[in-house]
Image (cartoon, rainbow, N blue to C red; front, side):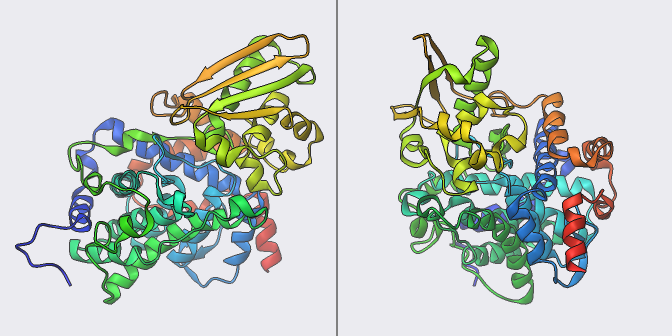
Length: 464
């Protein structure tokens, strides 16, 4: 039940009220631009997701889903909203290309929010403007919840985006469904019981694809939470800050004041971070440094005697993986990803695909990488390459193009999108231009006419 009207509102109540009050017409142009960047980037990642194992598994999983009003991105199929959101969440996250926040907070807005928003928009006939407003609202809530956790849930063994994602997904789904504030608050209360995801995949040596599942489930959970709330299910309004609520149950440390800090006056979306490479975010600065040094000094990888990478303690503790057992761990591995960047085109998503496990030159070079923990914070790293003649090349990086401090230019966003959607040929240009003008779209049903990727066709052929 809702607390008495005289009581101070809970965080979930404040966040629900705020989200429903977000209007496209009142949003600053830079905020709309960031929401659009998140949408475009996520759809490109979803289309590329058809080419990798996790995306193909998700498509097989929903192959017998009931027909409905929502398109599965990259296919001509229409299914129920929860199935579309699940498949979309996995597809967006399938190749480690999706967006997040910097400083890190255990949130993936592209994978958790965009698929839920698209499904809810198609189910309810929402416009492009309504979609963008919902994404802004969802990101503002998701990022505040992530920040309030102090990114400490993973210290307990949880995969944070699987925990935070359902809340943001419930916001976008509820806003686009047109629910009232009490119903949206109940949906947040329900979302807290739909959160989940363990980090054991990063340590066990097997089961890596479950990481991709966490984002599919997060997107799906938002749809389910709203549907349950509309059906009459209740959920605690103190779900976030309560004594047995989300922050206390999942986090080693937290700050509940961050849940509503600056709400309505400061946009958290300004911390949106787009990935440049198809690998884990902690590898981005050393990969970027390696890419830049290779170009500037014409580095021949065969002459590299040693590579030393200094960074935050997390880098050495979780990402110094010399011999990854599967694809997910290979994309987690800083030594392997840096080796790949010194041998191949780091901007090509396929560089961080099956090649990471199959290329003997990558594997050999990764053995010559040493990862050292320092007092560095965030993504800051120093990458030092020593050649066989004793020459030392070094580059420090605190960020890379795509971070909030150095956001993608329009050309860089387009370039990444085209790399992710190159199988579509000239149709990718048409799709990009239409997404660039999405605020002028009366609805989002045209997405099921999106060119079908070859892998999607193969999957649908198998299903038939």
